[in-house]
Image 1 (cartoon, rainbow, N blue to C red):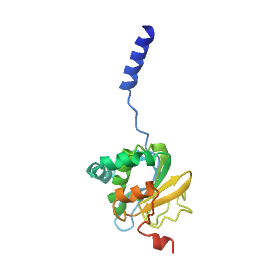
Image 2 (cartoon, rainbow, N blue to C red):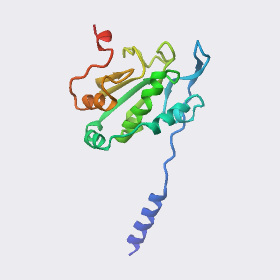
Image 3 (cartoon, rainbow, N blue to C red):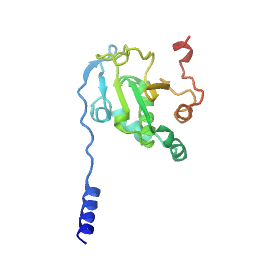
Length: 186
């Protein structure tokens, strides 16, 4: 009986706990050359996107993006065991359009924060710490899928067909070429 009471108390306590989101990472701020708009550069996390005063676009677009539950159910097993790296620009219209949907899909696939790395880039597509070095980042956003530390494929700037179709091909390890494949791989 004592074990049952302890188990019940533990269950109630565990159910009542909430996880606090990670703190925003410290980032460098720059301003765009033409408009003078501030933006972040360096490694960031989701909290940076949610709290940075110049990224109000993120939550609005994230909420607007509609999930396809049957696609998510089919792809979820394929997404586990992979890691993801996303290069973006908080100043970049393409990133503002595509990143919220990319992250909403990855969230629906139960990709954990520890399996995803986000880097905010400047207008020259660089970071102060050179996180992009050797990765051939030609346009942003660039979402790179890794399996066992090796790149499987990537989506560059925008999907060729749709986020669902492109990500599905990559997760299924089917033939896929991003929009700039011929430019990046002559």
